Image (cartoon, rainbow, N blue to C red; front, side):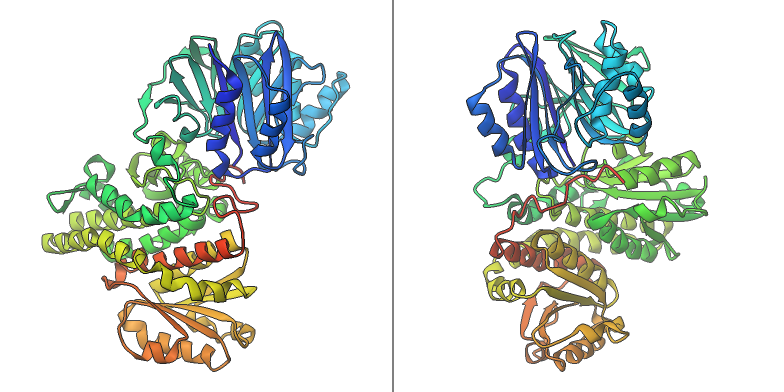
Length: 606
C-alpha cells in the first residue's frame, strides 16, 4: 500500500519520480503528490484521485530540479483529499516528507510540538514527522532524521527533503519496505522494484533503521549512527516483464503467465526429474526434531497455506496447524523453540505475517518462508526461503503467485515426505511428472475461456454468489469467492457444501448463482446431493469439475471442465476458471480490474 519514489542525481527528478509512481499504481492509492527542490526553494504539487490529476497539474507548472520525493497515498489517517495527500511540509515550510506506514504515537508527538508553536493543517500522522524533523534540524538533515525516528513508535519508510540542506535526500525505513536503485546519473529510493526498472536493475534492500544520505553522485548508509555496507543486487526482472504486453489488464496477463510461472517454479526446485530444494529446506534430523509445524499467512496466501497444510499432513502423517496471521499473532501459546513456522507472502512485506514471523524468532523457532520477492523483509528474516519464481505480479488480485505458492508447498511436502520415508523414490518421481504436466493443462483451460462469457454475464447480474466445495475443494472455493469479491464487489460467500443446510440454505432463492467445486473423487456423490439441494430451491448452478459424468450436465445449468489430476493437487487447476470468471465479471461491470477499490497489493499495516 502507498508508494514512494525519490531521486537525487544529475538530471530531471520530476520525470523519474512520476514514471516511478506510475509503476507503483498497482499498490493501490487515493491521492498523489511530489516535492522538488527548485532554486533552493521547496515546491510541492498534490492532487486527490488518480495520478493523472497530478500530472495534469504539472503540465501547467512543471518542476525543475534534480532532487525530489513523490508519493501515492492509501488513506489510513484522514480521508482522501488533496490536503491529506503527501508530501507533507513542516509548518515553517522548511522540511518535506513522504511516508508509508503508521506512526502509533503521533498524537503524543503532535501535542508536544503544538506546545512548541508548530501548527498542523492535515488529519494525517505523517505531518507530525515533518514538524518533528524540523524541530530537530541544526544544519545536518541526516542527523535530524536520525534523532526524529528515535522518538517515533510505529512503522515507516520515509523520504525527506529540506531547503536548509538542499543537495541532500534522506531516506529511512522501519518495517515498511524501501529499496535503493543505483544508476549512472543518480540514486533512487522506492517502495518496490518496478518503479526503478526503466533506469536500473541494480538495487539495495535496506534493513530496519537504515538511514541513507544521498548526494548528487553518491550515497552513504548508516544504522544507529554507524556507517554500514549493504550489498548491491541485480534484479532479474525486465521492464517488459512488468508491462501489460498487449493485454487489457495485468490480471489477465498474469493469468496467462501461469504456465510459465509453474515451469520457472519447478526449474529451480527439481533436478533430473527429482525434488531438489538444496539449502531451501531442512534435513531429516531437523524435520524429526520439530515438535509441531505451523503455517501462517493472510488472504490468498492463507488459502494456499490451508492447501499446503493438507499436503504436509499427508507427507508427515501428523497434524499441522494453519492459522490466519492477523489472528495467530495474538494467539500462539504453544509455538516454541522446537517449532517450525512456515510463512507465505507474495510481497514478503505483509505486516501481520511479519509480526508472526518476528514473534516466532523471538521464541527461538525456526522459520521457513515462501515468498515471491527476493530481498524482502520475509526473505531476509527467515532461516530458510523458497522463492515462488512467479516473476513480477502487478495486479492487486493475486493469480500466478497463488499457483506458485501452491506448487512450492506441494514441493516442500514432497521433500519432507521423502526425507522421512513416507514417500518412496517412485512416489516422488510420479508427483514431479504430474507437476510437469500442469502447464499444459493450464493452457488447455485457457484455450476455452470464451465459453465462460455467458456464465460471467449471469454472475454480473446478481448481488450475491455462493461458492461450495467439500474437503480440499472447499479451500478452492474460498479462493474463488475471494477473487470475485476483490474485483467485482459482488458479495461472494464460500462454505463447506455440507454446512449449507445448517442455516445458510435459507438464503438460496430463485436465480441465485451457486458455484460448486467437484474434484475430490471420494466426495463426488455428496457434492451432487448438494447441487440437487440448491437446484430444488431455484439456484442457477455452476459445476467446476474434472469428472466426465453426464449427470453434471443434467444437474447443473453450466459445467466447467478442468483436466484431471490427483485429488491433492486439484486446487492448482480448479482455481483457473474461477480467476477468469472473476476477471470477466469485473470487466463487464466496468471496474478498475488491477486496482480494486480499498485494496492494496502489499498490506503493510495492521
